[in-house]
Image (cartoon, rainbow, N blue to C red; front, side, top):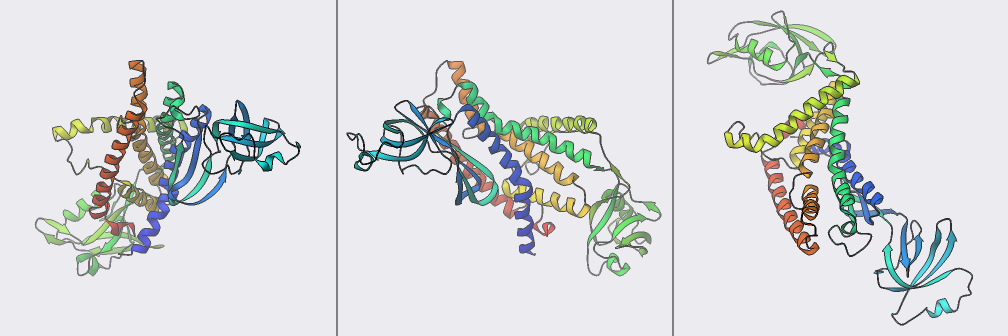
Length: 439
């Protein structure tokens, strides 16, 4: 097994397919947080550990009621927080005071000796910091998987610029933004898939030929494309050819094969295995050049909405279906980022080989839908769990203790991380798609 090739495809899939789905989720949280006036401490491209801080956005201080703008890239003194006394040298800009220099003061000190020795060539503000926002740090991180947003005080309302200090409507909007944008993206991606063209007619591609079998003796080779068998055009793909082979043990079949630019006629005689014929080939579906249906935008929207609605209903009904035995535990097994990346890699390879966007776009749509629905589940540490706390606050008429809420989310996060690690191990040792198919 060529692990270098597999790693190349997996990394490429994370960057090209999975990364953007995760990125738009966090970007939606980020935009709504900014609109709500929440202080966003960091927006990271990729997951930690941090490689480098790219730049720092505009921030602000409030010193004894006077608002001071912190310019982009300005580095505030380490450890500066609300309640500290400072001496700030500013200039007058379009938005009022713009910070040029700031110095921490002792509690009983009005200004430093350095400040006292300066002439009054610039406005100077001395007082207590009542609000501090150093500006959002935009960082580049090691793991190329989407992004993350670090907001001030997600549960703690003590800071007026924290998420916890905002109104219930804004908190709901910020937390729901990520899942909602994923649901919207799922629809748009599937619309794009249908509009780009849906294969409706299939051929069969030989992916491998077992040595010493009837297929090897007949001269069939890997990458041969089977167009017809015994004069019957293959239009439905694997099942159709498989039935023809099984029904003809020890009978000669004429296969019309495309090899490169050549079309060949090859005679093959399947061996008898029990009651069925056996040829000795590994097969994969291949879209026919003549069988591609492109939907209009209106048709694509209608078909996409129907598909996603059906999948969402089935997802919600899955626990009941498991209890009734209508689906097996193997079919309903949870999938980690390892399994998801495998599925997306396989679809990306299909899109590249078939030169059709449909497989990759369809899979991205389904993953985006799954991410949106999963994050809306009312579980601690997920967006849905945080939304549930806001709903409970609205029903009760008073807030649940921030400390208690933080503990619940922390415990929930630890449980989710542990489960994720177990599922990741399962996906690696018992992959959903054999690793060999990703070469």
